[in-house]
Image 1 (tube, one colour):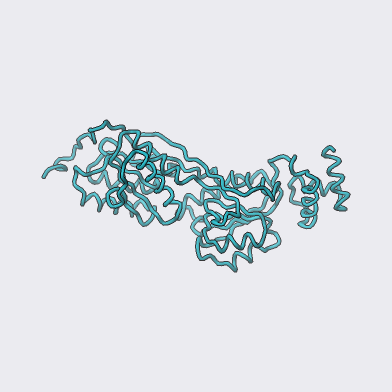
Image 2 (tube, one colour; image 1 turned 120 degrees about the vertical axis):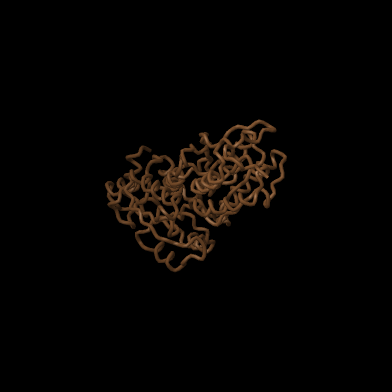
Length: 357
């Protein structure tokens, strides 16, 4: 049976016009929710969804829940850019995109229920919302949902996220390949995703038969701020003998890398001639203090695009198995990491008296 006959059959079964059925299956906005539901239910029953073009998004109103800081570029540039990418990803569809601020944990459940139960809310996305109660409520309400950079621990909701653990391992592996063995890791561990990245770093140490010692090899920063990182690294440098300095710093974000480089330079150390610096991010500050930053790019912009594609598939096949798509990072090799030979830690610095007793 060809497509035209299918549309005619759906129209006959639902007692709707052929033009209404066509508009619904084309993802157009000018149809009622009642008509849309009837057409899609019949289309699934007849197997029409299996052959439809993947480019169609069978909804017209999408609500995104995200932490308040995601709406301010100065507070969280990562999430802010994810939301921008989501808007771009939906530009080719007739979709009204709405937003609602929600805390990551201890979320306002009543606010969430009010917004998700609004008649115009056809589907939702949760960006960085870790509250398991909210995940339970999504399942109970039953509207299509995609998680972005968060996870449903009961494995009921589809999700897309960076492969944080593999990204951390990739970054550490690169430094080892460049000959570094004494590496200071500077991370902000305010969320489990950062813990996963650190776990990947530990994996890399173990695979190179090295023992990771938290007291020796880890500085935990209170935030991703360049200023706070600079203060912490500077304080650490003051109490670290010159001969005990690492050959490289692996830093959990570009702004943290900027603070690290500033602290090193104020101590008379050059990057990368004396100490290498590598970031896990690489989108926000490609160059720091005239140093081109080597980094592992976290797939920030791709998160929203893949979430849209996955939502399309959920709408086509709502009974399909649920899973999590983990996106790989990509290595950007620039100038802030230098190769060192075994037994050759660094070149001498020019500042007089730095190594004097």
